[in-house]
Image 1: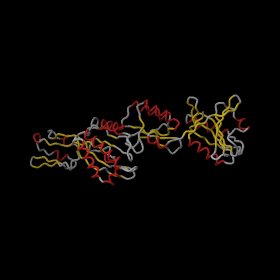
Image 2 (image 1 turned 90 degrees about the vertical axis):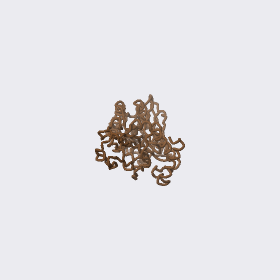
Image 3 (image 1 turned 180 degrees about the vertical axis):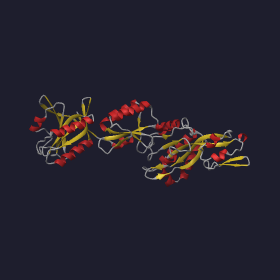
Image 4 (image 1 turned 180 degrees about the horizontal axis):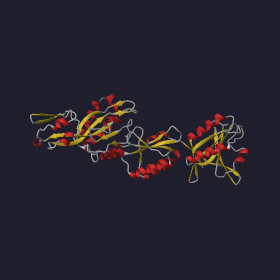
Length: 424
């Protein structure tokens, strides 16, 4: 059996029509799996005979094509030529040229409309028909599963789900193997901490996916769904961190990743006010914050906290400290810097909604400046996605929905959800 992909047939037919009334010709390169010949590349050639009834490819050109096949780790599967005015069956001259039992000889007839094609093989001097299968390519389904079409027909960039930007050494080794064996030896690191493997041929996709699975790597999501969750290193590694970001990223991914929505939806987690992951650029941004609680009995009124606060949210007046929480950015510098432990840090999350950094830049609006309960935060996430499904139009980004219906409607929806859960 010989397997073509639909776009390859379309290219061959186009080439045959362009060469009309001269016979068009070329070679077929690909791979053999369990006896099935799968076409990966179609190599067009010049018919030096310039005839309507026969073709001949110059030896030098054949050699150059074979070199290209070897560079792609392909084998010669057969050749093709057109019959401009006769049926798709071997002529007497064709039969004389069908000498290799390992090759498939494909004939395209332009006599019919649409053009027809058949494959033939030779065994012990006898010519018989070879089965040909043409596979359709569902680009939309592939894209939804993280497999994105490239400019060159037949090649795709495979996007991976890399939650929080973390990969093990074994996974990196797996990526090296896949990129070297099936791709062009390169990887692309995306702006959202993801990895894409370019130049994967459609004929290799199933094999590539299974190989990636063996290394614990999953395909990423594209289209109108919850995308890969991004996160900084968080408190366990970064001394500025107010929250544990990586664990939270895994929890969010396990609960929401891949869910269908009116448009793509991005969660982004940053561990502190330094905002390395730019929380407000995401549809739903999560920022780790520290709320400083002043402990009067420990305070010596040295004033260090007032000097170290980057936004002047702390004032000292007659031995009394006052913290303006409307101004405070939750960095926690005062808690860390106080030599007398005159502050207790209450750690939690600040949530922003409706960010986007695509064709139109929109900074997410901070609707919830502080929340300490992770469980309550997940309730907010549930209600937010529920709201987006209910109010969002197909193809409308979340910020567009909020602009159209108003942030107040989302706030009301979240308050109702809080009451439904008993305020917890």
